[in-house]
Length: 129
Image (tube, rainbow, N blue to C red; front, side):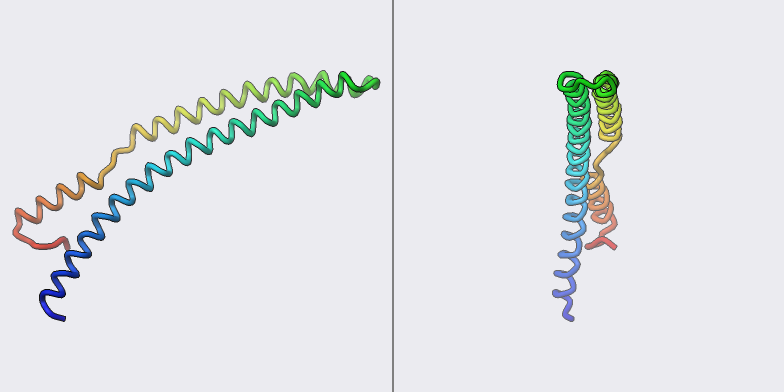
């Protein structure tokens, strides 16, 4: 290959590395958003289940004449309420963990690019190793 071609390839590789670092940062931000949405979906699933259990207990009490179904209904209603309370507690705990990880995260791609670019310019080198 010719020398100008090698230089073009080196420049393209350098641009590709910079873009990959930027893409990694975007992927990390998107992963955080997906985690938040997954936590919210889990809360909704818990609440849906809690409502179903409570409504099932209510229906067992109201629409049956059998004693054992009324007892089951009396048991299911508090279980549904407890499940709803648990789901909120779990959601809040996970949300705090996610926020903590998000605050601890520090993007490095732009800083990394700036430090390494200035280092190689000071050394007189044309490209990254």
